Length: 134
Image (cartoon, rainbow, N blue to C red):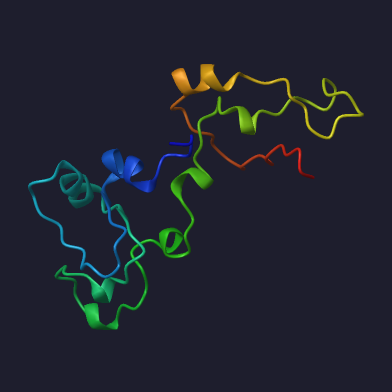
């Protein structure tokens, strides 16, 4: 299996209900800890339209928007919320990067990152991804 970003369902383990199947009406039950988190925080990661859910929501028939606009547009949590020590996002200052390099390979080894990824996520603007393809 190739190395990849964690899916939204990983984020949902702590942040509420994660629901990906738009054909299966979203239903919240009290048997799942994620459902309890959603009941207390209101967080639902789902591209499903509110009107298509199995939830009892006031004026549901008139609500044509999705629970999560990001999930609806296939934007994953990790597209903005990534581990600070993820090597692909490493950026050195302009003063430390040699001018002749388009891509600077000096960064944390992937095996060190995979062994212990940082769970502190960035705050503020998302940095530009260093790419050797540009």
